[in-house]
Length: 447
Ligand code: SF4
Image (cartoon, rainbow, N blue to C red; front, side, top):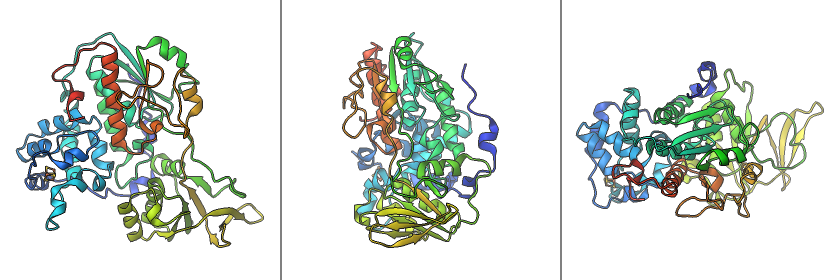
């Protein structure tokens, strides 16, 4: 029996993210068919090569064009079980859409693959038909535990459940979905979308235990004893701090913690905030800055220690942020925070002597690794950066019973996490002697 996802009030409250509308609303039927009919159904399509999960993109687009939405969604989900969230959060500009042959002609825009993918899967979600799309194997008697309920774990769990494996996902938070639920920019996807996808995975027979922390409530040794395999999709920990004077106290917050409050906390507000500095150069930093600007904060400045060209965040996202009024301060190295006598944050001082007035500083400089939890699984090693070491072909760790994927391996994208979950599910099936079915969903796609 599955646990309830969460009290309704957790997601039904007055959440700030609801003030940020969908930047790419779902297609109307006519729009989707019109866009699908522009596709050239390329042989050896470059868009497919650019998709980490190898979705048959021309195949699913052709099915939209011919009115076969059920077949279209099946094509997507067989290669990428989280094809719904990926359609909404993938950086398609540097993946499938960026590879579309239309880009070379500079005459017509590339095919809007993400929006078409969303259209097909959303239609099945809305009609309550997604659970019946993929073929299921009979129960095998095998058991697998997945630690963490982010995209990597959900993908591994869903594919394994379809292969007849009894899967339990353990999640320490009240809500499943990982960063899809707690961290995706609201103008890309709201919490409701992430939870709809979690429900889809549950509908495949996955058991979800939220509010249960492995390492505290459940011992890793017990998981290993009671299951045939364990998948670690544990993600990352708390936001990293700068470690400079004045940092402790109100007004200095971590980016992922702040975005989570924006998305999930009923009644969360930051009224009166006029000047915000967002420190860092990654995509989380850009997301936080864009969210603040869109919510009407007059002065939002990204503070980055190197130049724009060296930023790890996507150039197209930075461009959008600038259009929305976000400023970028390059070669800016924080030295200390200035506070008044009452401890109120006043400014951020830089190493070059400049002083940046601020009401709020958001730190997007990384997240801690979950070393302590990983260390409780014998044989699982970490590399020098603190990421879990796995075999490239299988996702298997140094412990033959333990596999891993997602942020704990150092990836950043939902779609690569899904691919790593799929890779591990395949390898676990092989290790458990489960015969690959000809119609097995996770064998679809070219990878
Ligand atoms: Fe269609 Fe573009 Fe992919 Fe060709 S590259 S199959 S036109 S989406």
